[in-house]
Amino acid sequence: MIQLFKLALRNLGRNRRRSFFSALALGIGLALLMLMAAFVEGEMGSAIDLAIRLQSGHLQVRAASYDETKGSLKWQDLIENPEQLAAQVAALPQVRVATPRLFASGFVAVRDSSTGVRVWGIDPASPANEPYRQGLLSGEFLKADDRQGILIGLSLADRLKLKPGDTLTLSINTSSGDIVEQPFTVRGIFTTGTASFDRVTVLLPLSKAQTMAQAENHASTIFILLSDKSQADAVAQAIQTPNYKVLTWLEMNELIMQTEEMASGYMVFLYLIVLVITATVTMNALIMAVFERTREIGILAAIGMKGRRIMAMFLAESTLLATGGIILGILLGLLIVGYFTRYGFYIGEFGINTFYIANRIYTKLTVEDTLNLVALSFIITLLAGVYPALMAARMEPVEALRGGE
Amino acid sequence: MEVAKVENATRVYKTGKVETHALRGVSLTIENGEFTALVGPSGSGKTTLLQLIGCLDQPTSGRVFIKGKEVSKLNRNQRADLRRRELGFIFQFFALIPTLSAYENVEMPLLLAGQSAAERRQRVMELLKAVDLTERAHHRPDQLSGGEQQRVAIARALATNPTIILADEPTANLDTANGKQVMDIMTRLNQETGVTFIFATHDPRVIQYARRVITLRDGMVAENGAQQPHTGD
Ligand SMILES: Nc1ncnc2c1ncn2[C@@H]1O[C@H](COP(=O)(O)OP(=O)(O)O)[C@@H](O)[C@H]1O
Ligand SMILES: [Mg+2]
Image (tube, rainbow over all chains, first blue to last red; front, side):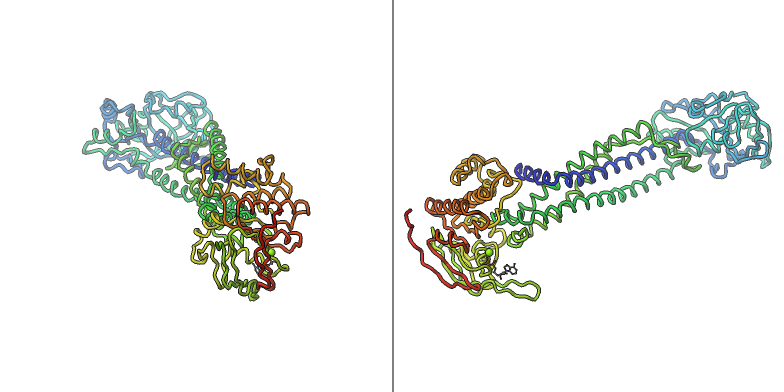
């Protein structure tokens, strides 16, 4: 066994450059796959986190008849006395924050340009507003009793060339189906680092939004954050009431979860493609080695080496190549992934309303992904070595001896 | 004792539609301890015959026996085992493994035979001494002269104490002095250990070492000489 690997190592040493490059091919392939896996993990992880932070929360309580896609403001589709319900929910030990929010649709006009927006009435004091409060770029945050102030996202501000202190006209659809219009002063500009959110969302104090939409003392939802998102089902059970429905983050983000599942399916496919390519490089190097060493194989067969052992000799070479390649790959992969985990990967303003993608993605490499990739590339490289090894083992000693003459 | 027997062996090579009759019915018997030259012009079938006796190849018709065992009845692995146990090879080209030192080349058949490290070490040193290469033990083949490489090959052929050593024109690529040294060593080993040597050659200076000469012509035995006793020089 030891002799076998010693021999294999020396044989690889005969053509150092070829051995190095075939190990490197595997290394680069593996590093690339580690980066891909880390990118998807980072992207998907952040997609769910973003969706929870910006949009869905961990739980939402809504009127049974509320339809998110219609965004109805009719009273029967809303929650009555939302502050009271929010306070009750917030009293549960697993709940970190519970706050009412009112959603309306409208558009913002400045001078001669206008654009459609979603209007969110929020309780300015609630810690649930952290993503917007922290992302405040200029101006100041809303106050509960502000009747003229509005917060807008960075992308929207850029588009309409607005800065704090500027005025805009906001029109919204009311619960009676009318459209009301009113001037507002931009109090501040925020960014969530997610262009698809910032472009369409404007924030008003809840009470102002309620008056304007003629939905006093009503809210579209109770937005709830838990201290641990795995508690979502348990808490949902606890706050179930006949008139209202409770949605968990899993239900509200089905699209993301499905996309994630699909993406992992595609990833396996991609892994296989990349690894088959690197395995071809290894196979090629080994086949060349078998041809070059035809006469040697003949000599070894002549002095009594059996096919099995000749095969083992070449398999030992592919094992060493695989090991070398994997070590190179892990080093290279950690280096590259480490960089992007730290500095992120700017992908630009991307994503759609229902699927937030951060402008910058931080890669995240899991131990599980790494081990899977290492095992997969090891196995595939070994498989690539089987054919050349069989070729060597099946040579007839006379033919092999003549091969070198 | 008969160590090798060839019975009416033919060997036909097919290359495309061309058939070459390399051997056309060869019969001969080799006794233990012989030092026999296989002579004949180039193309007369010497190499082919050595390959049949060496179990590297099979006759198209006829039979080959090694120590009474019929070779064609053995499978690939059994033939490999037979080669390892009973046969040693010396080729015209210096057939060493280039990545291994002289020592390791000689050790290889012992490794294949599953001998322990201590046994191997002792045997390899003994063999290298017999071919006068103790000092060159850790040189790679490319650091050795042709004569030295051929002596390593002799040591390797002898390693597992085979019954027969087959040498195909062992001196053809050597100068006179080295050729003589190789033949002297082979003669000495034959006398000291009793191992049977069969060597193919068409060099008259080599033929004179033989105690028996078998002449091939056109794939047939033209002259089958008798074994002469040791000259006692
Ligand atoms: N593999 C082969 N394919 C076709 N012809 C061969 C092969 N090996 C040997 N021959 C032919 O068989 C004949 C005998 O060859 P060989 O045994 O090598 O003779 P020698 O060793 O006496 O020179 C020659 O005509 C040679 O060309
Ligand atoms: Mg020949």
